[in-house]
Length: 517
Image (cartoon, rainbow, N blue to C red; front, side, top):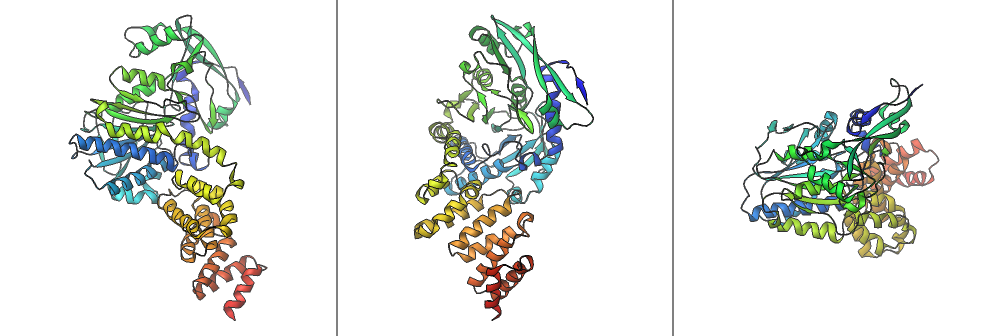
């Protein structure tokens, strides 16, 4: 191992961004399925429902303007594991079917830098019905330079100016993960913060994640009059920082702004942005800001500067909304960079209902508390909270044991509601590596409630997944279901499989004797 004494880099050009890019290229979708990169907070049914409601409102607004013939493109930047896109489309289709009204057609385009991720989405079993309906497409997209979208399913290219409808952009955990500039404001002057990275590493041996974990950062400051130059495109917001801030480190989203401006050129009618991130839109939160904290989770993320993004586009006529209350974990904003944005009433009302009044950030805060209260909860609290969260599969896994403990005292209505919730949960479940666990939990609960037909269906799904294929508990529960359904041959088959795995399994031995007797 050798010690690198450090080299000075402009912040946006430091090797940390190369390591970030290399990490995602190496890990692919596994970055999320291994629970390294956070995804639940921006990919759960609660936030998907909120986004679907806003998109539905946007489609209603276009219909009210008579724009019902041309297709609306919904573009997700950095679509991650694909869970959010699937759930948004599921919820959006439910709303459209329920409303039974005339809306413009739409297509949802998932994008990512990594080609293998695009391939993974396109071949994912949960995506196939959406692809077949023409609702879903995919494109590899480099947010730092690309100016067009090459759709893999339609085999077409969307070039600047080709879209007639406004483009709807979704950007979750996007602006905090792409290169940013780092500037310092002091005594009314703007300084560039160059970063020195000191590492103990062997460049040929360590993986990107190890580089990030071992790095030590220090900063050097140099005058940067170019930010105040009349030709600098974001001079107005920089002048605000000069006038209002002191002793403050500012992450400036030049790359994020440039990306939005390039994407904007795809449409003749502007764009709408729905975004969620760790990011501040209030100027006060940047006062006396310390150097940025790198939050490591396999890759890394920083704080997004929503203040700069909001100011730049508001100066161009955009209508921008963030919550009037302070966020805790996730700041969700909506920006309408379109002609007469105030006329998009349904979308603005959807933001009011789904984000401002009580939104995904509020829900996540309550859920953190709720997770520690399970042992004291009754079904009359558990079931409404499950509904509030959109029948989330992770909630069911976390609370299954408590629900099981409460079943002996459950009313008929509560049992029927659990059954109903399991079916709704599964209808919008995005198949991931823990599918077998979720199907097993659902099957066990249905089995305990005496709903053997439903239980058999879910237990058979669980049996197909590798992680529970050799689980004798699944086989025994299947044997019980088949026995109760008077499917004796299947019951016998499952019972014998249990005993091959566990010859001393007393319940299975007793069932075998009953079946053979």
